[in-house]
Length: 383
Image (tube, rainbow, N blue to C red; front, side):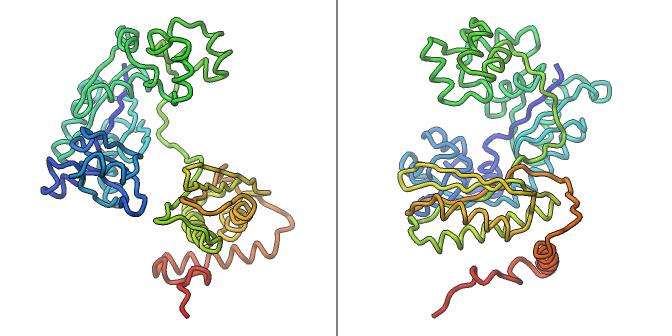
């Protein structure tokens, strides 16, 4: 039993309530404005009693909870708090795998001689977060990542749950199949149609049956139902893609406005890729229509790039080919990320020129700010 999962309780909302005493005890939702199709990023536990939850449309949240206090997101502040939390984790082990700003796995197998058993380390982490940051966290401890994550969620908020190896099957048996990591609504519905509602019932099915019905994921279901998980804690998790999107306050029919929005998003993504010395091998366009139908289209690149111009040309090509306005949301993501450098004997002169110009512009922005240079298409058009 050496894996700890720490999950902050209603993280964004709790930070806002900590920093503003007037919000304490009130239902709070952090996210976008309801009149601009905002979405709930995090809801305080007071708001959750009314059925408000993350990823819910803020307009729906306000209807469920008329006294809801809406606070805009402040990612810089949450990142600063998260950095302190991660420092606390690293006090006890270098094997820390962050899943997001507010949760992480810790492998403490090599730390027991120094700090004591996992239960003590987990308790110290929970205590320090409360005393040093005035925030609460839930802690789960188990023999592997799957069990530790389930344990941290078991008694939220301020939970502390330890599941030793000999109690794993007993702990899992009554839990609904939706609790299995990676099981979405479709998989859960398919299991329920054959009379499987709990993990205990799932455990009774043979592996061959699950593989026939669910393919490769069938073997995962078989192992998780038995509390088996061989995935290691990975201290450094390389992102598989980087993306940005925007929900419009009103549906957009103007293709030029959509292109301008994509240009703005591409500028930000390109800067992010170059700052991290990463290139992408594919570009994906994401469109959501007023009826909430979601469409994604991807185009592979002939060679990896982090140049804004190439990314923008690719995503606008996808836009022109697949977009049917009006549009509610638009976004793009860059996938197949790599740090490998491709050396060519006959470099493209135009591309080399663009790389030099881009590098010069990045230096200007680093020194004077993002607004120092703008693409002409992003400038305000005045009559």
